[in-house]
Every structure is written in structure tokens, then in C-alpha cells.
Image (cartoon, rainbow, N blue to C red; front, top):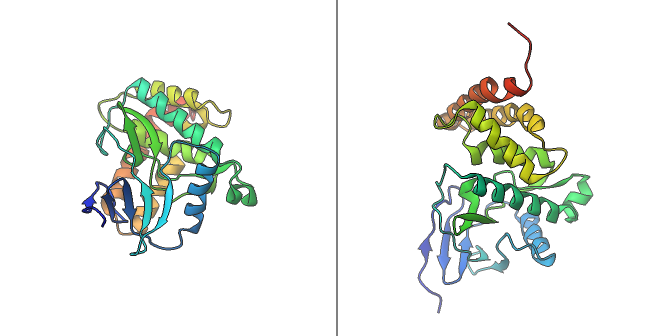
Length: 234
């Protein structure tokens, strides 16, 4: 007989509960590609993601439970935490280059597309695993890294000045260590990611999300993009 269900934090779209040493997540839409991705990660020995154990009698995903010792809303990360986060994302991306959907589409990697601190598990305060692959799709390293830079550094947080955030972005990019993902690449690409999120939020009647993304866009243009790519206008 299975243990009592315990609701886990998060789960804004899918209901997520813990039963014993497993996590059960409700399934929405076609998840075959995401399930194939998790099986691929297991097959090649990538240890930074939960294992897919199948579906239960309610049609929910059964995943291995991985503990975390930081709350989902954690912020204000240290240099060591940002370094570890960037290295974990690089390991994940490298692990997906041979995934069938990536190869078939001619993409670089399988983007997580929502890798934020809220979709991260921590051990001794350090990120060690990614979760929630619902939005995973083939794409580029820069596309995925830029969104993670935005959310991990919490760009527009008044606690950090523009120069300090530039330093932290450089640290993240150096830890990721790929020629397509330099500070200059990210500084030029951040506005595209932020404008895209704002447009999606407006289209889906999420006014607060749109306002947040547009505020981040204004701050990023003023303190990050223009600092690295000066436009020359008076």
C-alpha cells in the first residue's frame, strides 16, 4: 500500500506530490519527448536530473524523489553558487547533444527553457539537479543560458548595481565556458528573451508577469546591454 501523498511546493501548472521516495506529477499534453529526454539522460549517466519510473494508475509521471535544502524562492546567490549553476547547465546541455530530437532538428542542445532557481535542487546550498522539463525543446545554448542568467541573477533587483551584475554575468558565462555564450552575446540577447516573456504574458492575460518582464527589460537595456554595446546616441 502506498504512503500518504504530500504536496510539494511549486507545481503552478502540474500538481506535484511526494509518495515515499517518488514524485508524482500530473501530465498535460504530449509528454513523449520529455519522457524520452529523461530516459536519454539516464542512459548516458547524467546525474543532474530525476529518473522517470513510468506512470501510475492515475496517469501521473512517477519520478525519483531528489531532496533539496534550499527553498524554491531562494535568491541572492553567491559567486560559488552561480559558478556551480553555470557548470550544471553546461553539463546538462552537453548531455543532450546526442539526444535524438536534437540531432533530428539540427539544433545545438535540448533547451530546458525554464531553468530558474525554482526548478533547481540544492545540496549543501549548491545546485546539483534540474527538474520540470515540461518546456524542454531543441534550441541553442545561448537561448537557454540567457534566460537562466536573467533569473539566477534576478536582473533589476535593486540590491545589485549595474556594474556588479555585469561582473556576475561575466562570472556565469566564464563558468559555462562556451564561445557562443560570452558576456557580449548574453548582453545583446537578454532584451530578446525579456521581450518574449512579456509578449507571452500579455497574450495569456498575465499582467503581473508582463509588467515584471518589461521592468527587467528597461533595467537591462540601461545597465547591461548599453554598457557592453554602446549605441553612440547622445
